[in-house]
Image (tube, rainbow, N blue to C red; front, side, top):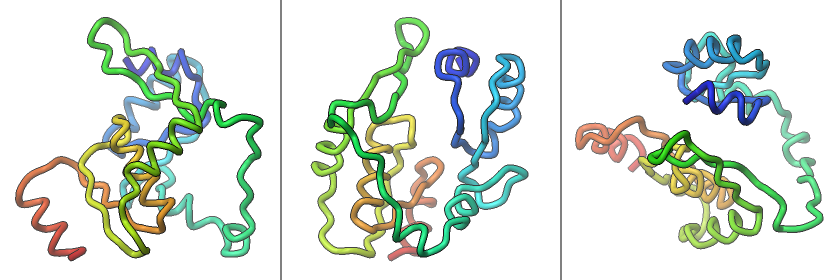
Length: 159
């Protein structure tokens, strides 16, 4: 499946967990695809998500300008189906669809909320929770897998 994704999309950046970097690197070599790997873990031999974000100065962040779209129907991102009837297929989401869905899940008023969502970025819910948190200046906890103990630890930590 990873080979299928690499061949189909030829990514420029891959965001992943440290546990998958070896396999992703091997598939990239096999498919002759060159890209940057950024990991969500706090420590890695690859660049971490936190370090990638930390490279920007305050003035760069404050001066950031989004690319102007000619239409809200332009593609925003591709998410892959489960592949239950064959190889996974790309589901294209427009900016209009993504923005509308973010506004629907953005139910927090104010800033500095902590959002716990166990859906990962392979699911639309995980993407929407993450983008909703970013757009409302909140924090999203990216937990690995649900266990009652893990949830209690997260709740205790972030209260």
